[in-house]
Image (tube, rainbow, N blue to C red; front, top):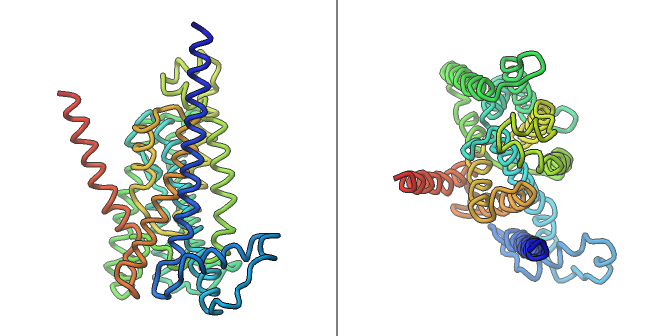
Length: 356
């Protein structure tokens, strides 16, 4: 009996590994395909050669003489950093969504629930109306102000919810929602008095990766990668916390410490993501929820698969945003909402039927 259970567990683990490998291959081919799409006509073969030309050792066997120099520049300096940035943003938001849903024991929680997006939007709005177009340490000040605004919002919400060394998740949620409404009101008032900047503010809030660069990729990369590993390390704790805080404590989990670490980690990841992309909705809500339906609630599996799912979803969404009506762009937040909102409504209707 015990041997049968053990073998079933091993087989299930092998199944997940194979599925994860398939998803990785899909992500790789999606990056190649996305790099060929755009105004410039670049074939898949040329894109592969250009991408491989940057891989150590392999580049010694690659000849780019038959490829136009401007195509090489387009792939290396414009499309590839944007594709990688979109994948990192998708990973960051999805993994943060998993962490929040586990911590709050609510599959409808998302990374913006603590007012991170509102704080980032306020910071970006202030930078836009003050006409901060200069660079700070190589970054656009709008991005810098958005990051500061996001972190400040989380700090305010945390300060309101904290009681001694404990954090009430209910108070945390209520404080986040209330602060979001307050900040949204402030942004609306600012927009009324600065009508000439409304288009820029709205476009930023709707989300865009048009300003993507290697510098932004290098900046967000450590936040997302370290955030992923921290959350994955606490995946077992999140599994136990789903049974309730009291049960988790009785099993030796330091609930309050875990909450603080997850809150701090996810806040940094989401703040970094939002600061370079604007407010992109539904990624951190829908992707973890969909992955949970497909493979189950075990965070040891849910976290890595959500990271891949978020990356794939964001690459597809951003590719559509820049290729549907060239040379103009649709805000990527509008694309993700176009996919995410109907799916979310479907889930709500499905859950309502199950209750009946």
